[in-house]
Amino acid sequence: MKIGEKIHRIRKERGYTAEQFAEMLGISAVSLRKYEYGERTPKDPMIAEIARCLEVNPSSLKSDWGSDANDAIHILFELEEAFCLEPIKVGGTVVLALPESFENEDQEALARALHHWYRNNRDLKDDELTRDEYIAWKDSFRA
Image 1 (cartoon, one colour):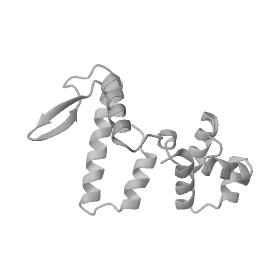
Image 2 (cartoon, rainbow, N blue to C red):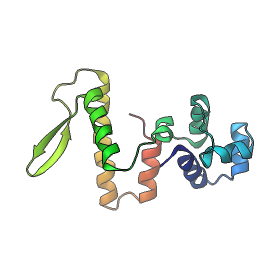
Image 3 (cartoon, helix red, strand yellow):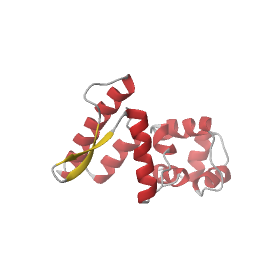
């Protein structure tokens, strides 16, 4: 999902009209629509302001990853380099694993974040969280 689509989705979920939200941001409704329709991409300071107004993590707006297998595997390659993730085989399934001992704080933060994600994903599957609550959690989560 592209950044504009994410802004539009979350804005609507929060119940803001384009005019209301544009006013909160101090921009015109036309400028907001250009962001939402992908005609313009907001710069980092505007992304931070949009995220603040929507009460989400700015990273959740910026992640604009592809949706095919080639894009996915290259994202995983980047995670391997950045966090020392490695593919291992557990039974007949290949999973990604963090190293047993962490080399830096980012690896520790990622490990904690993965545990949060696991618990919330389980809660979703066990019907303890609604899909909307799960999406809201993901949008606002900060590692």
